[in-house]
Image (cartoon, rainbow over all chains, first blue to last red; front, side):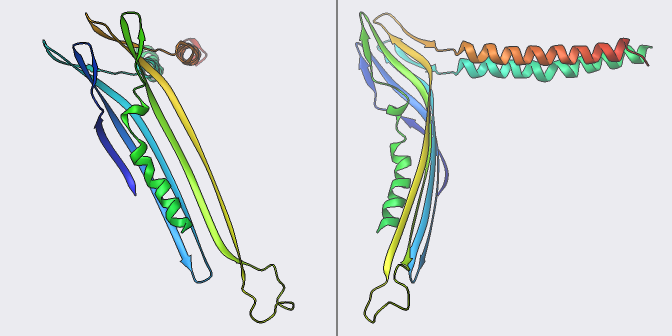
Length: 102
Length: 131
């Protein structure tokens, strides 16, 4: 029961002279409860999992390389969110400066 | 027992959280080998109950009658799969091509744009408006 976070390496895949090993991070959560009485029983179970690919490790005769996997959509959304948070602060500062000057 | 089966199903979540869920099977396209990569999230809930079923009224029950047992169970779940990138492997190079959801970004951009215009309008009113 509880949250578990694991970094999992998958089975390497060979493509030509390259060996590719996928790596992912797994967040899993489970909760279960049971009640046993004289005349019956009841119980419930909850489970959730979030599987996020992290990187692919590429091994070639020339060496090893780690290719990180990024969620470009989320990164763009976070940049827009940062703009949305920064703009009112900056505009408020500008308004304050203008009125202070007056 | 039903409860044991229910708990086994819940415990299997961690066993099923394997790399194969996020890194798809390879596909060969000409000289390239392609692996789809995505993010997976899923969850579910199960419930079970068992108790006596009072189907026979006490006045009609005879000695030796065994009480009937009633059971009920239910469950629900959800799954989300989001493609993140495609890994292209050739003899010369290995490249990761991200998959970008432009619709989502444009929608968010429009909301942020509206928010910026709103903030700008408020500031202009504060600066040039009546004191």
